[in-house]
Image 1 (cartoon, rainbow, N blue to C red):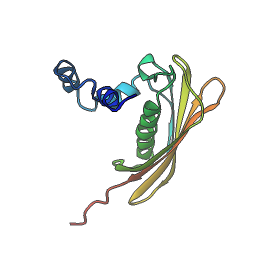
Image 2: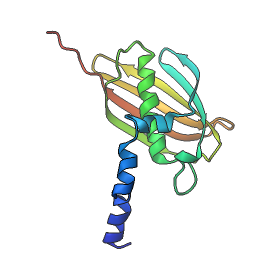
Image 3: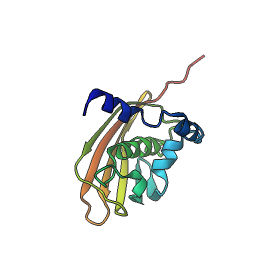
Image 4: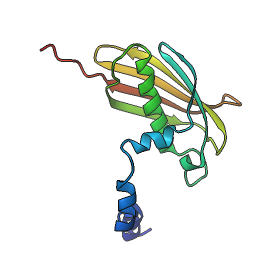
Length: 154
């Protein structure tokens, strides 16, 4: 692909017709877009297990769960599990690492398990694993580190 074609591909949606549609989306739309359909199966201190069927809207060009959607699930469910140990807020991401090990296809039921590895005064670290619910085969493993803003003593 030539450079101009790459540029056009990346800039698609920048025209006025699509701009009004995108700008009209509600705040934090992306989170809801990925999370819609999540069911909480188990919640306990330091552990959260959720499930969902892979919807067509989260597929990539290869017709399996998009890596960006997977990373977003690691981000959001990794953040959510921090609340289960009594944190008042989840801070900001410092690092997210995702290893993609298998594919999940449309309507396939997946399970997402988040575990707190450590939540201290300033840093929280969690692990998130996505598995095929039927076979238990691992789709992706993620680790998420968050800075938990230290409140001022003033």
